[in-house]
Structures are given as C-alpha cells and as structure tokens.
Image 1 (cartoon, one colour):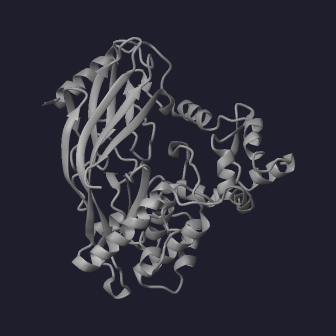
Image 2 (cartoon, one colour; image 1 turned 135 degrees about the horizontal axis):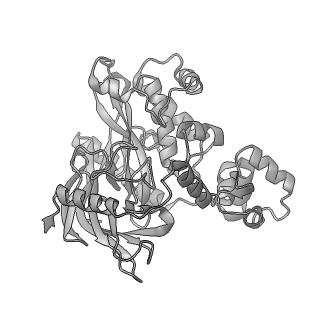
Image 3 (cartoon, rainbow, N blue to C red; image 1 turned 90 degrees about the vertical axis):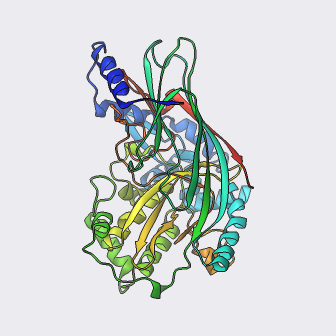
Length: 444
C-alpha cells in the first residue's frame, strides 16, 4: 500500500483553494452560532413531554426553577428560548429530587462498562499484586472504524479531506499496533510526536452517493494500576521541564482563575503530600458533579468553570476540572482520551494522567470515579491511579494541531475522537456525517 507524499497533499489543497468560488468569508462567530443551534434544538413543549413521563403535573414554575439552577439547560438564540438536545434526560441526572423520582420508577442498574469492569478490576488488581508490575491483563482487539459523509453533503467531484482516529504507538499500556488496511490506496499517518494520532485520507465526492472512509487495525490494550502509598511519592523537582509544562496554565480550559485558586486551596488545605492532595480533589469532583450528556466542547469558553456553574459534567469536562485543580495545586497533570472499548459498551471517552515523583505518570479516570460496585478500598479508589484494560488511546493532549494541517476550525476543537472532515468550502460539522466502529475481541 502506498503512502501519499506530503507535497501531493499540499498541491491538492493549494489547487482547491485557488479555484474556490467567491463566498462569504469564514466567521467563527457565525460557525459558533450554527453549532449552538444544533445543540439547542428543542422547544419547551418537547422538553415538557419528556419530563411529564416522570412528573405528569409539572408546572411552569418548576420549569423556571430548574432553569435558574442550570439543571435544565437552555439559552436564547435568535430571540427564541431553545433547550439543549438532552435537557430532559439530564434534568433527572443532575437534580437530586428528579433523580429520586426517576429511580423510584425505573430502579438502577450497572451500565454496560460497569458490568465489564466489575470483573476486569479484580483481575487487574490481583495480577499487579502477583506479578509485581503495574501493566497487566492484556486485551487484543481488531477494529474497523468507518466515517461516512452524507450523500451530496459536498458537490460532486470536490475533494473531501478526512482525519480518522488511530491508536497511539507511544504508550506503555497500548502495544503491538498493527495497521491492516484503509479504504483509500494513499494515506498518511501523523508523526508520533503529534498529540492527536490520526490516519489521513482524501476522496472525491460522487453525486448521489455517500463518501465512505474506513481503516482496519489491531492493537493490544492493557490494564494499569498503581497500588499507591503515601511514602512512595517524593517532593517534586520544580525546575524540570516536565514539572513546568504540566503545572502551567493553558489559553483555554486550564485557566487559573481566582475562583479555581480558592477552590484548590480549600480542597488541599493542610496537606503536603501530592498523592493525598490529588485524592482529595478526585473524591470531591466525584461526589459533587454527576455525569450528564454534554453540549459540544467547541461551544464552551471555559470547561472547568462551566462544570462548576452547571454542577455536572461528562468525562472530558470533569477531567479538565480535575487537571486544572491539580495543576493549581502543583501536581503535574495532562489530558488523555480516545475510546472506552468495553464489549457491548464502546464509546468516546476522556480521562487524565498525573505525575508523582518517585512513581511516574499514573492514569486517573475522574468520570468513572468511585465505582458503584466497589467491594474494597482497592476497587473504591482504583481509578485514582489505575485504568481498566478496555481503552484505545488516541490523544495525549487537547486542542493541538492536526497533521496534515486542517484549514478550517475542527468540529471538535478540544478533543479528537470521532474524526474530522472538510472540503474547500469549509468544515463538515457532525450532522453531515456519521461514524461507526466494529470491534473483534481476539482474546476475550
């Protein structure tokens, strides 16, 4: 299989740009407005219909109270009040009284990933204790990832540029990555030092047909667990490049605001050990911010502040809050993401890593948090220094450049998971394409 040389890509892109017809100049404000309209797409009547399944006599006064508390997410766009696409289900996750009402009616059950992890976590813990090494319990997977651009989303004959997620080769718990095939004969892998791992292809649109990009690969994912002890964690050498980079602010989403400074100081007051500081932060975020379906990250100016304001967050949102509080507290931390690959429960997923002197980098899954099924202290805090075997690591940071470079702002300007697509006329946003993953579990 041939790999396309960079100069070919640059020539194609330059040619496309040179023949682009006159159009309105790109505006991020206009783009953001359309993204918000996509996320906030429901009327009050539609949201009420959902709520009435559990609260038949819901009143307008209750609606206004939930809106004021941000439990019911809405905003005014084009002079009209519009509700978030998952505002109804989120209300019953975020508001404690509503949660109790729904639970009384439907009960609770472990999610698909929790059912898998109920077996996987004891397997990892036992193997670590037996083998005296932190990375264990390998799972081999063959994956076919497919991204399909809608029929006629792009004029016939125009070139579509596509970036697909690809498993990283620089992670100790993700090994033996084997490329098998791609839908196009010419493709480019991002260099290993790129923080977003991609496979890039191009294809011309055909009238009346969807444009399909796909890749197939195999890799092995291992579980990891560090049986952390206070005495194993040493004081930091604050002069190192690692310490300086991973305790620094970022232009977006890791901002040391006075509010977050005050919160970090309160959470870690009286504690000097970095592990115990991080553990306090982990527990506080777990206990105070239930999971809820998230609006697109590209529409949020400051994700940790958004979590505090709205009192909920999905995996990437609570991870960024955890990372920010750790960095303010002098604990190196960074974002990591890709997919959770649990059998029958795969999905996009984000988590973090923190660095402890004397131990190294350890994984932290703030969203998985304290497992509901935890039967002992090891399982209770497993995800504060551990991660299950069912992952695909794609990113070691957020909001970094893609390679080859993307001309227009990404659909997901923070994370990179589903893929990205554009043509000479602009970015193709999520409603214009779909993605799917077929996973064969080779040793499960």
